[in-house]
Length: 331
Image (cartoon, rainbow, N blue to C red):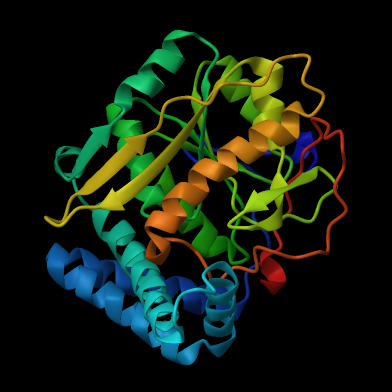
């Protein structure tokens, strides 16, 4: 996107002017608005069951992503039985159905109720990082309840920037941006967003980046993830090494009482300046922390994404011209 065409919406996404809308865009938007109204009228426990039901339906009907999920689980956990991997796959779909419904429900609550539903672990790590004045890079993946984590962070720690890819449906994208920014956060479009990320770090803000999607650009580096080489964004490592911002892995898990545990891991030690492979080394460290959580809670990660692919040419010396184009279009 050209800088001259960018529009900064307060509290929302920095993006281009609105694209054309199709009939499908409007129908999808109306459907999600209807679901949002329904979900917010339900008790949390009912919403959770509804989310699980949506996920179960998705598992039954979406044969393509069901196969991707089962194939990924088989490659990662060959020692587990087919029955166990199938059980995990069903739980994955149920989790993401629940995540959608509970995001819609959570964002309809007043701020004090939202904070009552979360507990923070390791909050001192992010506070100490921000005290250093260089901002912080929060690294995570499509794991657990990462959207709720960002929302609660905005209320408890302070507004942050969330890096995300725009949805294909501009009406749904606008709705999601409004949800993501409802606690004061801003959303930065991942495509061409590097300068805005730098500005956020220079303003001593936290910036959240998801590192677990296959990307198609030459700025990818291949690191080991769950036993296989995976093309991974080098943006976090490049930014940390350039700015000195702390790199803090962050994750979220559900508790049995309906609340959520939001975890900030200790900051990763940055490679030394004389390390010729510093970008790859730091990217690998970030990925290993994510892997730890995925192995402990495989039902909470996005296995339906084609994470391991060969359609990318990686570079040995990633530059700051990082433009992470996710391979979701044919995931």
